[in-house]
Amino acid sequence: FSAADPRAPLSLAALVRREQPALVHSHNALEDLAAASLRLTGFSGAVFTTVHDRINMDSEGRRRTDPNARIYLRVLRAGFDRILAVSEATRRDLIDYAGVPAHRVRAIVNGTSFERLDAAPAREAARAKLGIPPDAVAFGLGARVATLAHRKKGVDLYLEASCRVLDRFPGAQAWLTGL
Image (cartoon, rainbow, N blue to C red):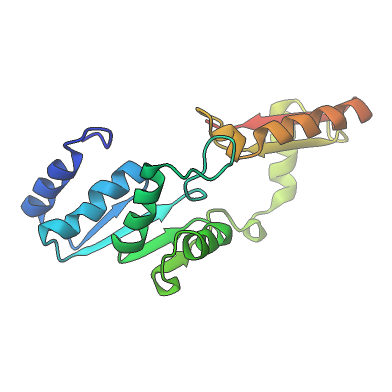
C-alpha cells in the first residue's frame, strides 16, 4: 500500500490482523503514522521506526512548526516501543527536540568500517576506473540529492566549497554521487 493513501492505516491494520507479526517496523513520517496507529487496533506486538533525518526540518534545514509537524512529534513520543536513529545527532534530536524518552531511542550508525578494507589496491583500481590520475587531488560527497533533500545534506555547501578548491587547485577533481 502507499503511505500517501489515507486508507493506509486501515490497510496496514488488516494486514497485521491477518499475518499477526511480532514486530512492525516503519521508516518515514507517513508510514510512521500508519504503524503508530496500530496501537489503536489493539496490536500487542512491537512497533519500531527508524528515523533517518533530523525531525521536522524543511528542505532549507529549518524546523517546521505546522500542525502536521506537531502531530508527528506526538506520534514519535507515543507510538513506538523503540526508535532507531541513524546517527548520534538524530538520537539527540529525538530525545531533546521530540521529547522521546531516552530509554526508547538507540543510535545504529549507518556506514562501513574501513579498517577491514585493504584500501591501497581498491583505491588504485577505483582511480584507474574513474580516470583519476594517481597524483591528482580528488574529493567527493555521497548524499541523497533527490527532491529537495540536497539542502539538508549540505550539497549546496559542498558545491560552493568545491568551486573554491577547484579555483585554487585546477588539477583537482570534485565528485558527487547519490540518488
